Image (cartoon, helix red, strand yellow):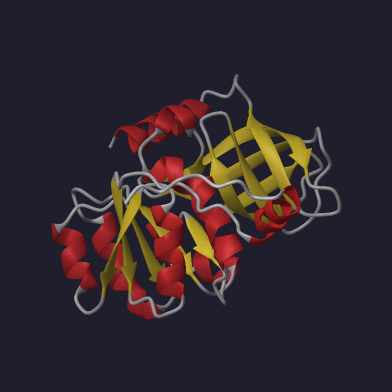
Length: 248
């Protein structure tokens, strides 16, 4: 049967245009993400979001840690709970999955900090809603797909210690890091242009201090971006870690 185009009246066409949203194109799966102990409807929402960016999802229940040790995945999604710690530990100790992107589900950033030694990359809030889940997957999908030339920032949640130029000592939580700087949320407001010393640890990178300057801040909030001092030789250790992370 051959389908023929038909003429639709302009008024009708306008109505159809607003009523029927176009189906987004999907790409052929180029990576795999494990959905571990996810229940509906979260499981379907996550699968649809990842599929839009060419990421195949694999549902896991039971011995997920064992499969993570044996099979290759580019990402996994786990609940932020003590029961999931075995999976995170398996991922970071697996020769093929040690650098996989780990998404947490539920809880707060403070809850994610309990598992900071495993380098949680990003957190889906509960209850899971498709628009916010899609936004998070879109923001991190380049890292999952290993398209590093277009994605040089590493999303990771870890504790940041901050000493300001007036000797205030603050704590913060990182959002993204690159060889040139990082973004984080701090316990107090910091003025743009202020010089700082920031300290953090990243998986295989032991705690490091580096001089930084606040380059931006969200209006009325406590989210900031800093640029590492290019004259601080300690910054090279961060660059080396970033390069190793992206090449693994």
